[in-house]
Length: 337
Image (cartoon, rainbow, N blue to C red; front, side, top):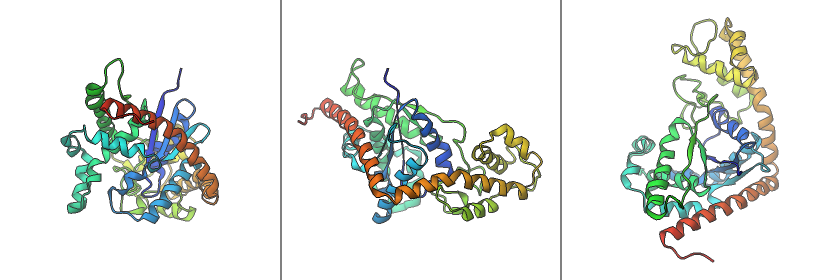
C-alpha cells in the first residue's frame, strides 16, 4: 500500500520562529516516517507584497536550510523551492479560470491584509489562495497540515478540486484531482506571543520581542525571555484562562526542556518568575543550538544545499507535471510530447 502523501510549505518572508518549529516543522519531521512527505519554500507567495529581490533570494535559501537543520531528511522527503517548478504558476492560471471571484473576496486574510495595504493591493494578494490550491493539488496530497488560520484556504482548495474541476471535467470513477483532507496537529500547535499570551506568535508582528526566531543568538533569546510579559502571581500553572502568558511560557518550557507537561508543572508549581525565566532561556538556547549549528554548515556549503534542493525539485517536478498534464487534458488542451 502506498503511504499517504503530505504537502507542507512556509513562506521565506520573515525569520522562522518557535511557533513555526514547534507548531509545524517538528511535526513534519515526524511525518517522514509514516507519510510520503513533500515540503516546499513557497517563495511565489512572498511577492504579493512589496519585497527586496536580494533579500528574497537569501531568505529562500536560508528557509530551506532551516527545514533541513530541523530534521527534514532528503532521503525520506522532498524539499524544494516552489518557483523552480513552473507547474505551480500554470496550474494556478487554469484554476483561476474556473474559480468564482466572490470565493476569493470572502477570504478572511485578504480582507485583513487589503485594509492594511489600501490602494496598493495587488491582484496577487487576492489570488494567492488559488496559488495555494495549486500548490496542494499538484502533488495529489492526501493530507495538508494546517493551523486554524489556514483552514479556510484548504477548504477553498477542496472546493475548487471537487466543485470546479472534478464535477465539471471528471467523473466519480475518474476524478481529475485528489481532494485533500486537513491534518490538524496538536501539542505545540499554538505557540503564543511573548508580549500577549492571547495572540499567536507571528512573523508579521512589528514587535520583534514578541517572538524568538530559530536563528536568534543566545544573548538575544535570554533578553527576549527576560522581557516576556508575565503576571504578579507566584507559581506557574497550565490552563488558567486568567493567566494566558503563564500557560504559554510553561508550555514552551515543557516542550523545550523535554520534560513534558506533568513534570514541568510539578517543578514550577511554586516557582517565581526570577527563577523560571533563566530556566526557560537555558532550555531554549540548548534546544536551538544544534539547529543553528547545522544551519551554519549548510549556508557555508552552497553545493550541498543546491544538491539537496535539486534532488527534491526533480522528484516534485515529476509528480507536479503529471498532475498538470491530467488537468490540461481534462480542460481540452492538446497533450505535450
